[in-house]
Image 1 (cartoon, rainbow, N blue to C red):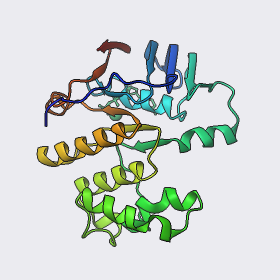
Image 2 (spheres, rainbow, N blue to C red):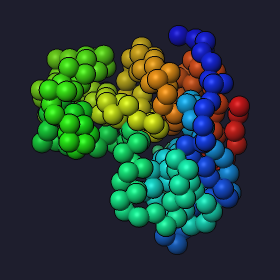
Image 3 (cartoon, protein in one colour):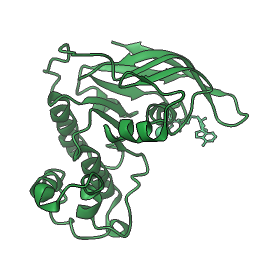
Length: 233
Ligand SMILES: Nc1ncnc2c1ncn2[C@@H]1O[C@H](COP(=O)(O)OP(=O)(O)OP(=O)(O)O)[C@@H](O)[C@H]1O
Ligand SMILES: [Mg+2]
């Protein structure tokens, strides 16, 4: 699949804005510094850089699970420095997250894990069942729906985690190495899924160091190195 689609059609304010942001863990050195950039509505970008460069940290900043030690962050137009707990929950609900370590609940089946965000929203199963099944089939888990995560392979867990992030049709998708455990042809298929989600209006950020994945799509690259961000438009 080649880069053949148009991402110039931005609408509205940025979904994420950082200004002079720095982060350190505890008393350690700053792992990210002087970050100033925006993620536009309906945009698609890769976040890259070597292992330890801070990709996961940057995603956690956007997810508001790590606080900046300096600078300003706004998410969906809201300054998050003194945000209330309710507000934080509301903003997080607009995000879909694929964690590098999956974070599936081991006592729920694959189907139940993927359906969980909808259940939490108070939706009736009858309204989403078919959609969850269709998405699971699309990611190749049609015959793994009713098993528990501990018996899934790494790549199967990864696909379940992706389906769970996508099922809510988030405004912002944060995916941390979402193709790190699958073969190249499955990676291409998953990339198509992210592109489709983006076409429907979601801003997509994919953290990866897989150049063969990035080379399939001519989109913006946020490149981390030595704690700083460089942008390849
Ligand atoms: N909880 C933590 N406490 C202390 N230091 C941390 C913590 N998490 C990450 N770090 C450090 O912050 C830096 C950035 O780590 P991060 O996990 O964000 O990198 P990454 O780019 O996601 O790496 P990878 O490609 O291996 O996933 C590293 O030096 C790491 O050791
Ligand atoms: Mg990481």
